[in-house]
Amino acid sequence: MTEPLKVISPRFLPGFLPPVYRELAPKEQDALLLHLLRLGPLSRHMRFGYPAGDGTIERYCNNRHGRAPVLCGAFIGGELRGVAELRFISEKWPYSAEIALSVEDEWQDMGIGTELMSRALRAARLHHISVLEVNCLPENTRMRRIADKYGAAFSHQTGLIKGVFEPLGPGYALSAASTRQQ
Ligand SMILES: CC(C)(COP(=O)(O)OP(=O)(O)OC[C@H]1O[C@@H](n2cnc3c(N)ncnc32)[C@H](O)[C@@H]1OP(=O)(O)O)[C@@H](O)C(=O)NCCC(=O)NCCS
Image (cartoon, rainbow, N blue to C red; front, side, top):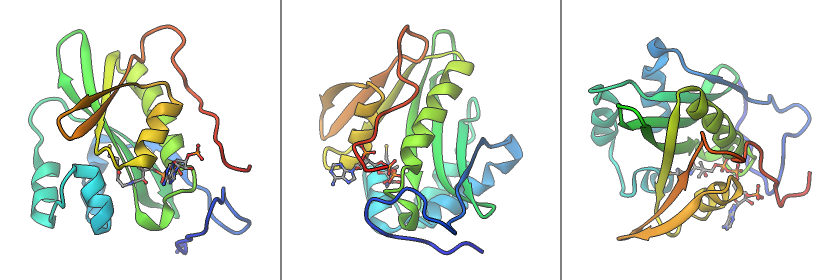
């Protein structure tokens, strides 16, 4: 079993098992529910834009109408600890999707969200998604920072910040510079 680690500005320290990043198979989608249920109250609020309870999260994960979401996961010690979820908005060409990131509380601020964003942009390109949008609360500084690093075009909606990526366009960013000490 891996131990959660919460320190300021680390990348991964000696003895810490680095994450394995990969797309989830359709049969693994139940792992998303367990991961989202492990998010603490503040993270749930940031992830859903309101303080989502267990029942709401279960209904959200059971909402299997339409095309299945693309899930990029970060596994630590075999457990799903971070997810980039791409839910299709338009299932007809040109495809568009909304992305939402989540990293469990003990593993935040270590670069996992940034890496998931990079993987999600690659996945969006492979799935021919031409417009990818992220919607987050204005106070969600981590999410805004990550979206900014990957070149999102921002606009303000009522109570939300919307960031738009064009994964099929020329010159979109696949890697992002960190301001942290390496
Ligand atoms: C948002 C979230 C996915 C980010 O993942 P993460 O692994 O914690 O993020 P990272 O460590 O990759 O990067 C965080 C970035 O925000 C920066 N950051 C952290 N706290 C910050 C603050 N208070 N103000 C500004 N920037 C901040 C970090 O320095 C880092 O940027 P850098 O690499 O340029 O230094 C994660 O925190 C999370 O799951 N939050 C709860 C759910 C959520 O908000 N989801 C988004 C809904 S769309």
